[in-house]
Length: 308
Image 1: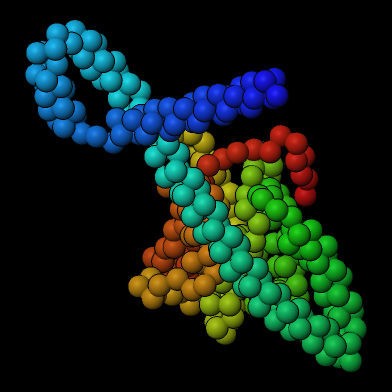
Image 2: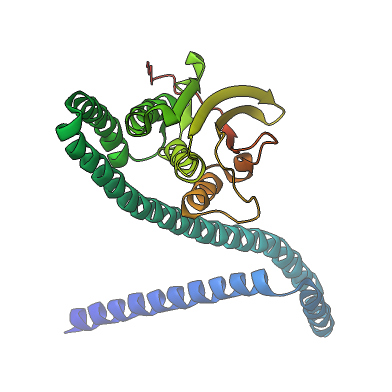
């Protein structure tokens, strides 16, 4: 019986010590958090009052040491609090940017879902008509359509950036179809140095600019016109810059009319991918038509090895 009572007493003592330890830890972290939040002015007032109250009991030296300790602890606590606050802000910003990025990609997917069927249906309808009237031309457009789909489908499934070479490959296939449809009403010029083909470039941006040039610039023009696609690179104080131009000599546009969905998506994607380091510029050349320019950081993909 005596042994049992001793064992129970030991357990009670251990439990009591544990409770005291938990309470001490809680008080310590509450004090730590309080130091992190309290203003320096208030802490100074509290320190002066504590020294005055401690003087009659000859505890001034101990209180002063505790105050010095508390000041040092506040510096550490304040730094910890600032770091945690900055981490929360950074996490929130990252979450917001992720949501914005997903929204833009969803918008691009929706736009792609609208554009692709429209383009495909028109092309297939044209092939169906030409089978009766011009079988060789129908076969030619059919071959171009296969090339276009081979270039497009992998990029639609891919995540992240592709290369400029891949986008040029896709654009050539698309323009070949449009030339077969518009015939002499569409002339094309592509001037892209080979050393730029491996440059990182977001998918479908170039395609959107070309589609805009044809739809809004050349198709409304009775005699049609030409599209010039150029790429160049330059060095600036901020780093290497890649510039892509798509220019047409079509009917032109109103620079004050604002962007459509396609151009808006390009601007948003550039902002999310590169921030202020990239931009989309729309110009109205003096000799007519329109020119769209994308400027962005030049990041060659050394593993791409893309050849056209």
